[in-house]
Image 1 (cartoon, one colour):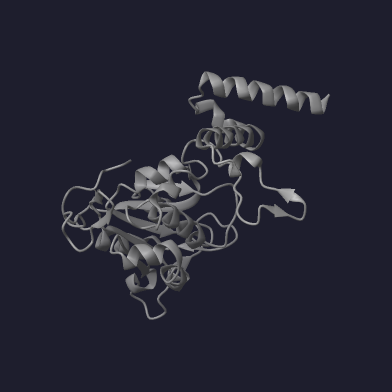
Image 2 (cartoon, helix red, strand yellow; image 1 turned 120 degrees about the horizontal axis):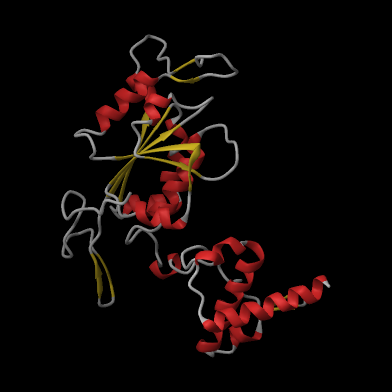
Length: 278
């Protein structure tokens, strides 16, 4: 799926204005181009004015455009939908406007990774997001109504689902995916280290986090976090991440590379849980 961005087009050398320096580390910044085809392009606009998308756009690491599907219609009503063959409730997108939009943007063919957002797609994972963050040009197609004509779906390179949930349209799901990708772009966030420590980035759910005050309504922050002992803090965070993952998402542990110390800790957690149940 991943086609690493080549050293051209969006790539800036380290002495260019878009290169970000932090101490002795210099990052070569690639501008990612993302477009999203929709009949409601204004749904995307608020996200370009706040948060990580705005930061990435302002720093020159993201170029984003919401494309109005109606621009590719040729009747006076700008029709984008029709009834499905075989009957049934609802409407679905006409294939011609979508095909014209895809062919116009993806020119030459294959220069954009074309992504559909639909319930029948591959389940979104952090690993998938990381792969997509290395692409140079992403083109999203957000479905609505009863979906997208299968002849259009077959032209897409990838179809993604954000989960077993029904939404009124694919734009919200596309925004979630775009946000997840954008925050991984070099220079997009203020703290690059934080993106590697959050849930799923390490393969585990994130450990519990606390801030001031140290005591709130009788509940105190765990002593280890204010001890100043970095090794103990790191071990506590590792164990809490393991515990939380075991309880909330045990499926993640199947593919996780556990150390012997991890296995011993999880055995103690399981024993404690069995004691509570018994």
